[in-house]
Length: 55
Ligand SMILES: [Zn+2]
Image (cartoon, rainbow, N blue to C red; front, side, top):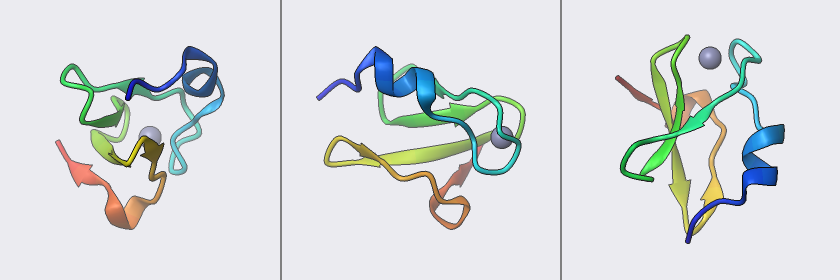
């Protein structure tokens, strides 16, 4: 399930408060500033640093 554009527009990285973007393979949401990828579980973005994957 793709995330809505509206949702992407309001989501920010919890660390740096910058905009995040959808990963190329839709597997998560990427903060290019922190180089972290936040997972998407069952269509819900998990915006937790503890759950994020380092890129
Ligand atoms: Zn960030």
